[in-house]
Length: 481
Image (cartoon, rainbow, N blue to C red; front, side, top):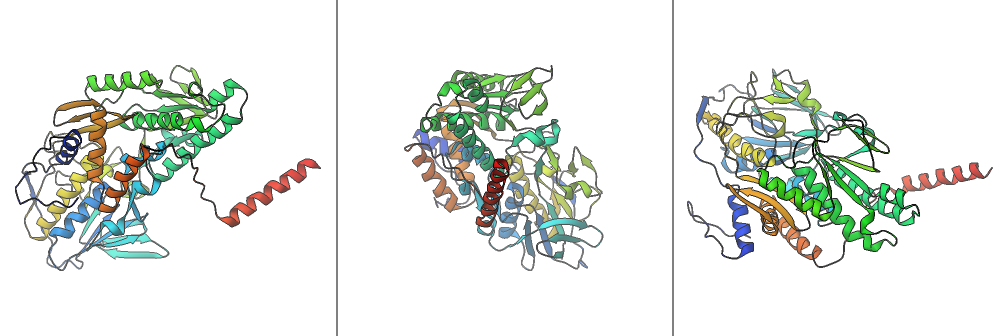
């Protein structure tokens, strides 16, 4: 876990299958080639503050602050502001849904990630570019000056993209979403176990997954795995009772991958019994299911949305140029017409010098942007020129359930169990702390040896539960009268 290599040396390629998967996962995020020079920037001598403030504790923000901790000159202060005290490792949320991972192991405490930097739990409500101040709230409203401000706050799920989705749909963007979806699956099993009408039982256990990208196929596979393993605990519920369907607006699944891998994913999912419906857009969601673009009704008790994002209110209120809710930046990730303000990650439209296109909103690009931005800030402090963002993506990985995945790494294509091992090895390496690496490694192995955990997590305080039971008792008394 703690092997160190000499500067400039490379690890030898392991010969075992698991070793190769781990090695490829490590090389997947290898440092890119020399970056192009961009515009020269420097810190003014009269600058009143020597604070570097980072807003957002996701992949981009944590990558930037960890890099700054190692390279920032003495006398400078770095502050990370985030609403939660933890970073959510979003690629592992489907593992929480399937029961392969304990919920707390998909997040890492930000105070354990940062070392020399300061962490502040708070909600940034406003930015004053003229006074170079960030206004945030914890218990009271507070202000902090900045010399450099890094906006890395990501995006929110946008359920309003489809009418009725906000009222009746389920998102998968946060740990709370994953726990809510898991609880909904268990609720459906509990109710189906008591249901005598077979048609209603199948309706209760029908899940529609809107979106056939990486997130869609991963959550569909996770739901199927959980239902298949858990149904043995529920008398009267058989495997033929549950029905998972993917509704994809485009012509095929996982368009981020080559067609051959997309076809493999579709074949594997359909072979397991998961319905795949391409060229099927959802026009409306109701309490009883969904309607497609042709007005056809699909009855289901559960609709999961994996498409649609929106900007944070903080980003929306800023008076700078935006593209589809994302802040427009120069090639070096500085916000256009905003001195001392930078933007990275999902909330930023960052040009990629490698291919001249905008960087996609993925964790892979967010982490690399955070690292290169930290280098740019250090160059600016030293009076050197910043460099444009340039990154050649190493590939894509997606699980499709039942120990299978699809992957494209360094131009090579993998599918099946080896791709699944590669997926796990890669994300195990990317977990931010040694503690989480060890916990996840052992939990993944233990979950393969023991029956599915069907515990339902309810977060309700004792006083609230007592009040709820009193209200129910009152309603029963009124009904009896």
